[in-house]
Length: 126
Image (cartoon, rainbow, N blue to C red; front, side, top):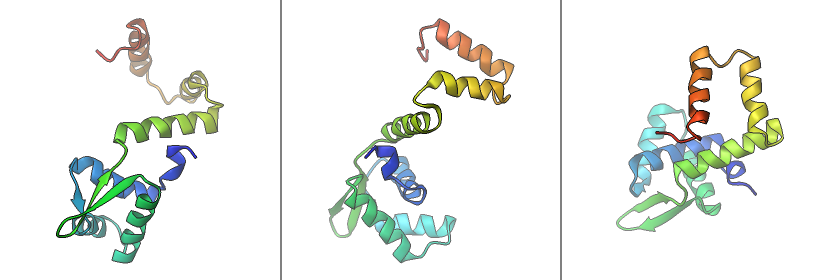
């Protein structure tokens, strides 16, 4: 199973907290933040965390309380999700994806100029 298929949208909200913090996070901190931004109950949040742990995407570590740490980086997740989207919608072709954006007017002239410059530089970010 591909990584992008493993993490649901709800589970992704938990992962975003863990990635942002960059250190082990106790359940209480995750719960407080998610209860402030969603209508999820404690049991729902606990289920999401358990599912992520069962999938091997996060690790738990018991100290005085249980702390959770991601086993994958946000960059790894994004890369897998991008590949999954390209495979699913465009047969794995980035060219078809960019062409679709251009054909639908999703890219501005500035975006296109930046992409041209990006490719001229060999795809390097700097």
